[in-house]
Length: 56
Image: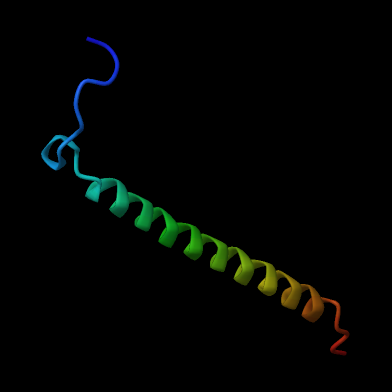
């Protein structure tokens, strides 16, 4: 039978623990990746500036 038949009970709903942990791990990864990207850009700017200095 399609459509509404009865309200769900808690035991019929799958656990969302795995999805929550996966999302948390993804958020941590994105934060770490963005931090490394910012660091890399900063280092590139520093190397560029030092490379343009005349040290003679």
